[in-house]
Image 1 (cartoon, rainbow, N blue to C red):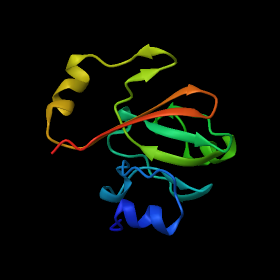
Image 2: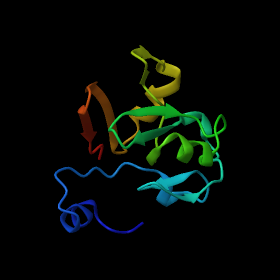
Image 3: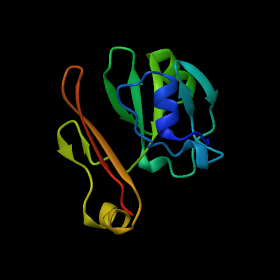
Image 4: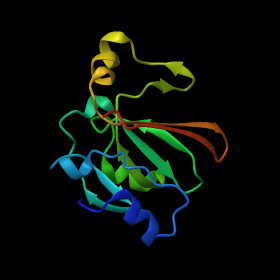
Length: 129
């Protein structure tokens, strides 16, 4: 994956574009884009979770070691993003300082997305450099 986020956004008339997926840098991990399954090998750090996005705009956190890529397709997942760790699931904070602070304190870009209401999201992006 070498295209700049701004170029991809312009080519697709996007109203928002965020570069925030680990798949381009890894040779393992499920890849589902636009409903097509491109890779079905479990990623090495499956405990971090993925963001499964459905056609209706809803999403959920999944863990590749708990569900197959084909099961995700069968459930209607249209896009899957490698991320992690998940910060909040079902309204509950699921990380603590030992889980996330070390990663967050490094000088890397960070992105977060959450659902406020149906089809109403909040996205936070920090450059980190």
